[in-house]
Length: 155
Image (cartoon, rainbow, N blue to C red; front, side, top):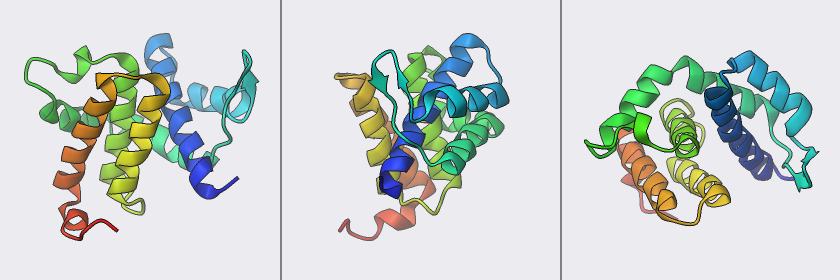
């Protein structure tokens, strides 16, 4: 399995863990341990969950929690005035938080790759307008945080 595939698995696991933390009231250490032991790379209810780059999973999950005020404020500013982050569905909220963290703090990952990866995560859960919303919000954020990457034409 390639590094890109393991990172995609890590992103999907982060989104699932953030959702579980919010819905179940779990802390980051508990969620991290549960996902690493019971979910990542395992078959659960006849669904095989992908392998994941564990260090990447840990960094994003703990980073989103550590930087949640900044992440939430940044996402909130990009959403429609009458539709703040707290009103967004929980899985979309988790996707936006994880993507925002990566754009702000993981400069080693190209912005276009971050956007593409989280759009792919959104497609794993949705078929409708949520995908476009994730794309639009992360694209606007990337252009704010990493304008220099968008001055160069896409390959």
